[in-house]
Image (cartoon, rainbow, N blue to C red):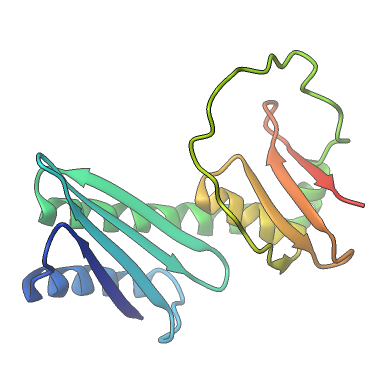
Length: 178
């Protein structure tokens, strides 16, 4: 795995870079990571705290963690612990779930938004994506890995954009486009 380290308001010293690379190389024992995989690390320094963000795009999912701490070296240790925890959780999910259970978890897309009151909130962030072509179970896995409540992808069967989301009752919902 290759590591790209970016510093915001800090010059990344060789000691910091070596610590980050050594810690991230320990993840290879948990997960099959290709040598061409690039781990993007952003180190930011604020007046009172330091923040480290790590993003590792793998074949099966995107591993992402961020930690803010008083000590940068402690933040590096904590972010690697978070990534290890994500990997363990995902491996457990994959071993427990099978496609039949996944298919049974889907419910008709009924309108759960009847009681929704529109708030006059201002737009905070805009993000553009290019949906990847994938199967439904892979989209759910990526959504779970990112710890998001929804995931937008391009369905491998229909070649159309679809959205999978977590329902409040614990199941999953699917929105397909025409």
